[in-house]
Amino acid sequence: MKKYNIPVEATLEVIGGKWKVVILCHLTKGTKRTSELKRLMPGITQKMLTQQLRELEEDGVIQRKVYNQVPPKVEYSLTDYGWSLEGILDSLCTWGECHLEKSGNSSMLIPQIDQ
Image (tube, rainbow, N blue to C red):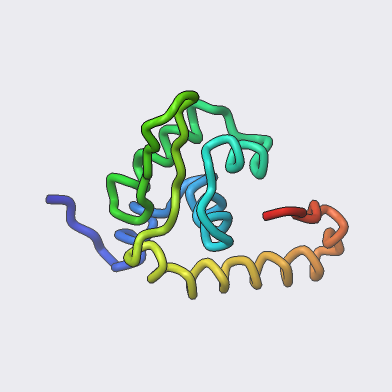
């Protein structure tokens, strides 16, 4: 079993990296299909998105629902455990907005439509 020096290391083990927090923020807005997440995050590759979703699912933060239909339909949503991150995610978004304003880059934020 892995040992941590401080608890935040355990947190970052689950939500660390470039894309996991972004995925989780989108899922706080509701259930999403893989294609919706890909559209909302144009910089992520399909392979990376799939990998990050699998890791979040393995950690119990999101759930994957597969519908038995053709074409295949898969949806992702936060679990109750995932919803426990909502305060952290909100704080990160607020801090990011303040950072963009402080650095004069608030125009760099792409408006999200239809989340």
